[in-house]
Length: 278
Image 1 (cartoon, one colour):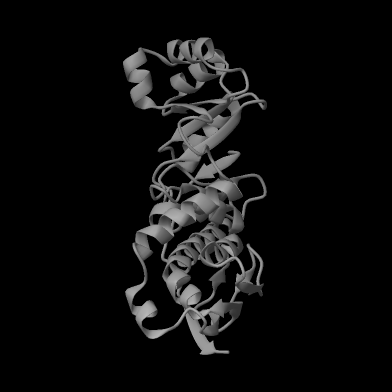
Image 2: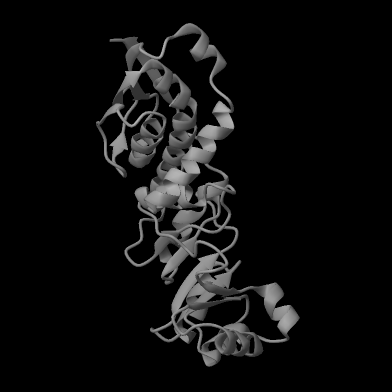
């Protein structure tokens, strides 16, 4: 995770919530009042977000004491203590909601990803995410996917080429689209093409792409198309794949199975904060 970007992002989130100051906290407590806070899991899941806790509270006050009791990717259970934070009461209360908002979402994604990996239970196919993320939270959401045992697809439009159906329709053919990309881009950037038919798969192979997506194909169709793809080209299955039907894809001989639901249909994990005065 890019810790410089993380700090910048969390500062933005804190500013959004704090505005010109926490009216309630500032009215009740002095700047000298100190206390402690423990973060507790209220349901089972997978943890993700150690750096969220360490960064957010220390942005508000660098002298805040933080004891982390879990690791990213660790399975957690209801009632488990996750961290203890000690320092100024104003710091604890001002950063609390921002920290919980991010933690609950990241742990929810990590937990859903772990369920997907377990449901697939495949020795040859990996679960990967998509760009269907919450604007402003992509780095954190994709990090949470890794904590749950999944892998990351491209992070944005800038780090990999993905030629989709609309690109192909506008360009006229897969070959032309790939040719133009190779003329324009760097040899260091991978090229993936979305395909739906045998003809498109063969055209993508001939064009010399790096990854072929088999979009909206059944397991039977996938296993008929994969043998057409040389070993040096990666394959990916995508489209209409949910946790409910994921076990069916354990028999699919693809390298990756991408799931948009990991970052757009997760349930936030319930985490609470309990406090006491020092």
